[in-house]
Image 1 (spheres, rainbow, N blue to C red):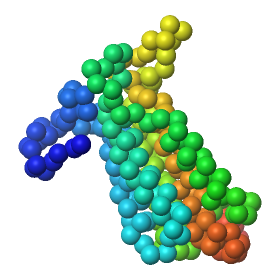
Image 2 (image 1 turned 90 degrees about the vertical axis):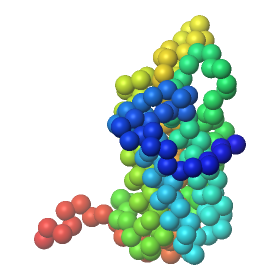
Image 3 (image 1 turned 90 degrees about the horizontal axis):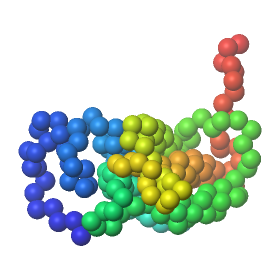
Length: 209
């Protein structure tokens, strides 16, 4: 368990912080930027949950997602090593499978899209779009970190290919989560697909006349 006895420590006043393995990193390190963006995404989902018009199945799913985003942040802040002293907290395929299940569950009753959706219509639906875009940014930041530090992919001998790399499942989780938030925004806006005229679609060049 995490035990926080004091919030301010003064240890980061010189632009440095510690990763989960206690190694020192600059606050502009791409790994720090990635898990910071994940933290922001979690806060945006908190705003969604603060609304009172969420269907209960979506609310329950987002509460699980909020907890798992802390797991994602912990994963991104723990560099990969071949033989860690303690087993690190990592994102697992089962969590990604659950996101895909929710994508199918909430997306099944929705009408097929004929164009891109313009965010809006309902505050909660619009806020889900904001959360989606922040998750997309977190994913881009994570890939920037992966470009610099590599991915934890095993070689033919079963050994990690990159010391200090990132868990690719953490990046996949963010990609799948952005899809889910888009589907949830459509679900909320259309009342589960019942209001097919609620969505305003992008018309390319439609305001030029």
